[in-house]
Structures are given as structure tokens and as C-alpha cells.
Length: 161
Image 1: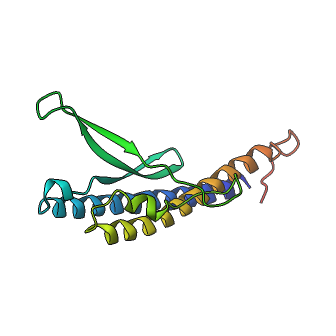
Image 2: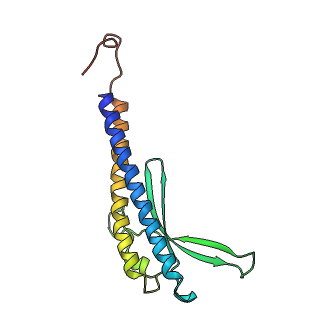
Image 3: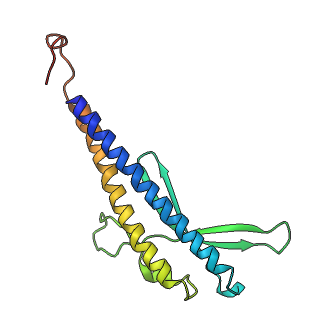
């Protein structure tokens, strides 16, 4: 059973890594599209909405944030990131939220980038959902492995199927 669990864990971790790489590619495609379009826009019409993709252990997160500047135009100017929270549309407090509300995101766009943000968020929500379920399965496998009985002295030398 341990070999089976190890095999399944390797498959799930491989798939989780694929999801992370696909999400990272989505973030890079979004950033490239915004940077190309921002070069042609006036300052007040530039897109300041960014997508951050990161992985910590088995957790993959895709978060939206706003980029703003603090200070004058000199060397004391600093970049400020303001994360946009996901709001739970369900009345159940324990309901999972895998998608940002589009009205929350579109509030921070300039108009020309609405469709880009909408398409990016739809794809990002699929990655969030899949990564969440893969991480849950990995946790369940670890729990299953912990509750399995260890080898007893009588069975220590036997080959078990």
C-alpha cells in the first residue's frame, strides 16, 4: 500500500507542478499583453492591475493586486501593492472561493483591458480550483499513510502485495 500511495503522490505532485507552470504562463502572458498595451496608452489610461502567481509547498495562489506609486518623481518614489480580496458570494461561511468577482476587478481597469482581465480571471479560477483539489488529495493521502498500520514483527520479513 505504501508503494501505491507513493505512486499516487508522485502523480498528483506532478500534476500540481503542471498547474503551477500553466498558471505562471498565464500570468506572464497577461503581464506581456498589459506592458505592450500600456506603452501605447496615456498615463491616466494605463492598466495598474497585476496578477501574481506563486507556489508554497502544495499551495498554488493566483492573486490580483493594484500597483501604485508613493512619493514624488525622485529617488524617494516607492511602489505600493494593494491586494484585492476575494469576496464570498455564498451565504455559507465555509464555502470555498475560487474566483474573484468580476465587478471587483473591472472597477480597477481602464476600459480597454476589460476583456483581457475577464478572460484571464476565468482561466485563473480554473487553475485555483484544480490546485486546491490536488492539494486536498495530497493531504488526504498523507493522512491515509499515517493511519496505516506499520509492519509488525511477524510480517516484517514477508512480502506483502
